[in-house]
Amino acid sequence: MVLHLKRILVLALLFLAPLAHADIQRLQQLHEFRSQGFLAGTYLLIDNNLFERVREPGNREIYRDALGNMDSLLRQMGDPGDLRPLYNDFVGLVRELEQLPEGEQAYYGLATVNRIMMAHGKLENAAAELYNAETEGSAAPLLALHNQSIETSRILLLYENNMFSSVGVYFIQAQEGIFNTLDARIKEGSAELKTLLPNHQDTFNQLDKQYGFIEPRLINHHTDWVPTIAAFYLRKNIETLDTLSSEQANLAQNNAG
View 1: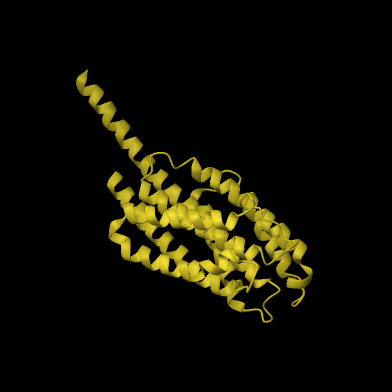
View 2: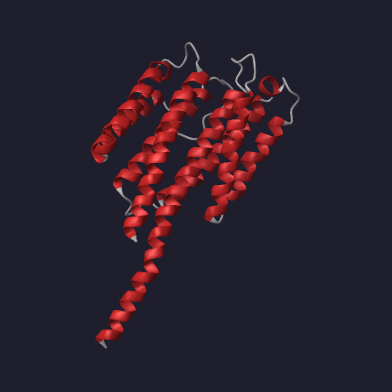
């Protein structure tokens, strides 16, 4: 009888082990999906902003690559929840904008840009809900890295969004002083990461330096627009945070095995 129970316990543990791995992997994939969604939205706005006289082809390449990465992640995850139809709506509107005659996209496509950002907001909210459902029992450093990446993505997209008076904010609850609120969260997040991952202190100090360079422009966002420069510095921070979170996810998965 005892031997029989031990066999049942062993089988149960063997069954649960891959589920634990899948949870960590799914959490990371959902985070990366959200991160790529913010990247796509950011560079789509930069590509269509009215302050740039010359359209830089690299901006379109970046948001198209991000959309492709999102598609790949959805396939890897098996199209969870309602993400696939929401993603298709998002991409469909982007393609609609791109089909406007060259030169008209930024000036006559603002209604479509607004619809695109509304679609991104719906997609982000749905992905965030799925992500939050996977966080229970996850390692604090991994969650802190994800949070810092998303907060940085939010303040960057909000900054780019503010170039368009006729485009709404749909990915976060807009309120008075939202830039200051996000700024405070990013600073708090940095301090938390230095405590949780002391071996990466030099990396986080470098991220602080890069964020500090662009921070005054974010806070004083109604003057002297620098959309491309802001994206350059904050994108580097986001990529570093996402690389670290991928490493932490792999480490957690290996330890679980």
